Length: 172
Image (cartoon, rainbow, N blue to C red; front, side):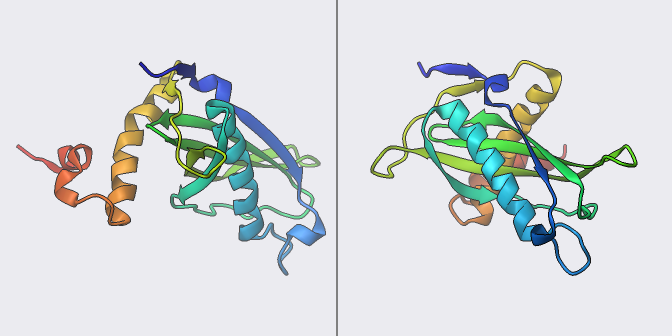
């Protein structure tokens, strides 16, 4: 039986200030810089869950809902949603805060997948993630469908073998 760990133990909150070097010519946080911050926060979360070195395996759609202005405070919150044998899905929320105006908006959200590896770079088993809150259960339940979709899109799983995805479309 695999070791188990509560999802809450993988929680990461990371805060950054948007400085001039982080922005484009419109004084908005550059998308590449945002993805870097998301990757770092998500990797720390996966490492906390697995107690291992992790490597980024995939990044789901990252939509940029709102620009994040120069001088804003960016807060990233990440936690593992589900762990498979050696891979872990991590959900990241990104918040942008304008402290002088007192406004805070959710600007980004994404799912990253990491694989735990040993010192030689070979995949290694990770603990099972145990959801405890309703939101954690919702993310956990959807993780298998998202995983199958990733594998189908990567050509590593035949669509007819994606049972969780097929169940979504079977009409009776």
